[in-house]
Length: 93
Image 1 (tube, rainbow, N blue to C red):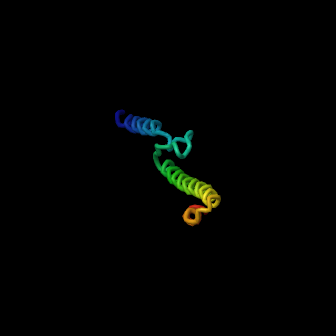
Image 2: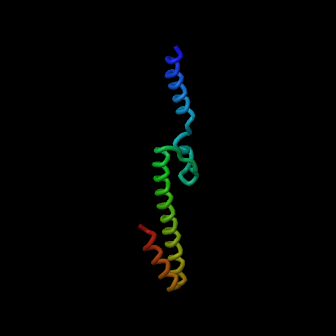
Image 3: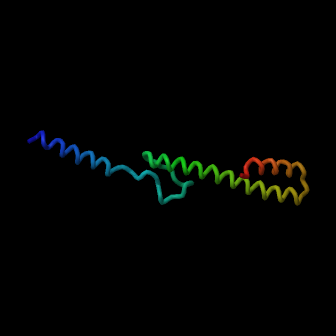
């Protein structure tokens, strides 16, 4: 009888372990605010979030460079225009 109870308890124990796992990632947060990733699904989301954040950073740098270029053109600052044009060509896709 004891041998028959071991598989039942083992199944209950293993299913209980699965129930206590955290969610793969914090779905209720923005990619900038997520800081916990678990399991394969969490790591896949981590890669997506990192790609999103890298693209967002480039987009922000591009927008700032365009504003700085407009200011440099208004001031007729040739060196600043050259620098901002180079920055735009490197960051804007």
